[in-house]
Image 1 (cartoon, rainbow, N blue to C red):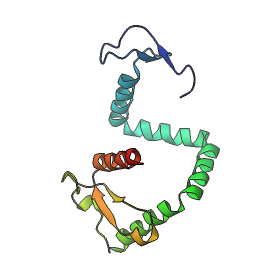
Image 2: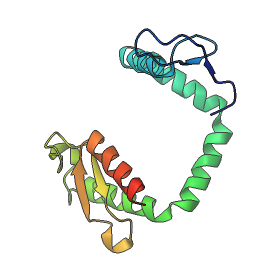
Image 3: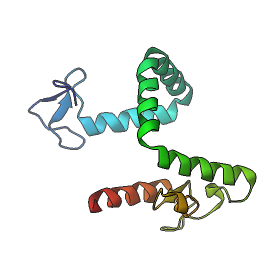
Length: 142
């Protein structure tokens, strides 16, 4: 977090009680995040235009990140490509046609327990929230 991005304002937020606020707009961090998410949901065209403009202005940074990520996550990318090829060829079901293994909602992603080559096809269909929770649990377990 860059220095001075947040500022202790003194008064708690009327919505959530937080005292951590953005300096420029005087909104608490959590409420500002919710506000931005609501705006993005209600304005998908403007959101996409903003994303494209941001990418154009920061292209070198994105390409550098992509290069670093691909060089440090070769096994992960290989596993994801393998699953993508299997789904495209019809040898595996699209995860969105399956139910989440944890909660039963419609799955969005396949989750790899391991990215080892022998486990590339060993995946579990999960909804987005359960997938995020699995990764949080893996991080906590070390």
